[in-house]
Image 1: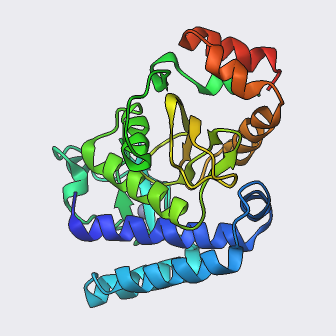
Image 2: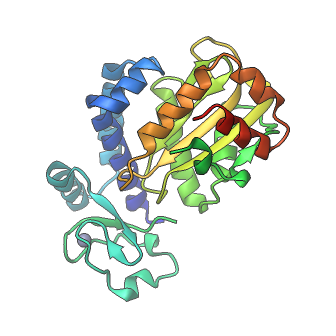
Image 3: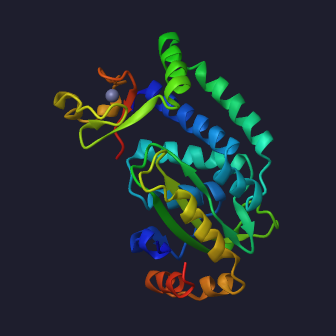
Length: 118
Length: 150
Ligand SMILES: [Zn+2]
């Protein structure tokens, strides 16, 4: 897997965890059943996100920030040949790669980073 | 929605012989048969969640969980560890029963929270730890879920 794609995936997962802790269902479960301190957890997640950001090239960092800011996610899955950022079919030559995750693919149509789940 | 419908027999390991929490998480992630890289990412996310606070909810039960793009649908696994593991659980007791839940960030059916809730509900039943200790095979585990109506 492309190194920066791996970092982007991790960062997105952390952003998502963070957001979930600010909202209803997950927050209630985490603070109730699991007795987590949501505020401390959010601080810890922020620190990790900042640390990971430094691993990205400047333009990738900027694209990530802008996508997360406007669309709440930066990396989208490609499932059955369709980009889940815009629901447009990806060029078949991309998906035909031995492992398409070895490249950092950016959707030509919506600009999201793409990931091919197994 | 029935909890048993989310479990497959090959994602149930009743004889874990792992030594540590980390090793156990890795072993359970392995039951999903993802590629090595995805397994690594998932493990890291689960660890990170554990670092925010243990998912050991007491009475020998832990429910490690996270969302990640590396899975394309909700996946659950169950592991039983006879000797017990140090999970830094809320009651500081060893963990014997581990329910692992992972889901993609966006699910059309949005089952992550309800499934987590159902496992929590199941875990709170008074006789569940001893019943889990007694199940002899994966099929009996699934029957127990069914019997409890979760
Ligand atoms: Zn797209």
